[in-house]
Length: 175
Image (cartoon, rainbow, N blue to C red; front, side, top):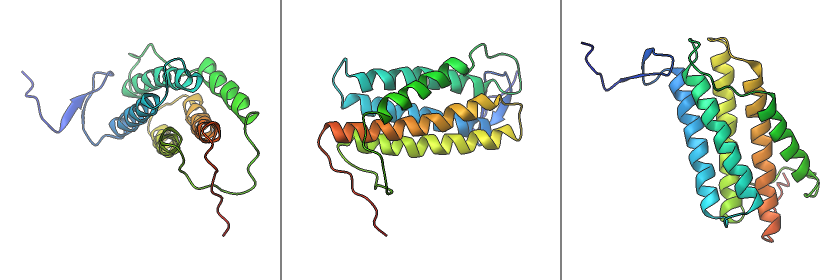
């Protein structure tokens, strides 16, 4: 009988790995991002269009986490694909049209939901970096990295939109 160790866990792939395995690091960042989106949703009213978009993204993040946990095997039936990227591209297009064009960098912040979405965008960038690192060690479909890249842009736009909607004036860096 295998003795359970507190410094190891078993992935969907069936592999027993140390808890500092890069796949677990990526899954942890994906979970952190999904949790942040859940916090943002707690600040929004039921039926809010942004909240519904964030819930859909949380569903995508479950798929992504499953896919990463299965790396090194063929056990994951769930995969990020074209339809997930298309959803983000459409979301980006929709919210770009609702926002003034940026001419300078802005400071993250704003109303609570907007500020938290700026934080979520930063976590999404970390997820993207971890996926790039994973792609050097495992056969990872490049669409996963494309998804993470589009996700951070979508979250940035949603943060800006919530701040605009609530009347918060963005603070631009003037350096």
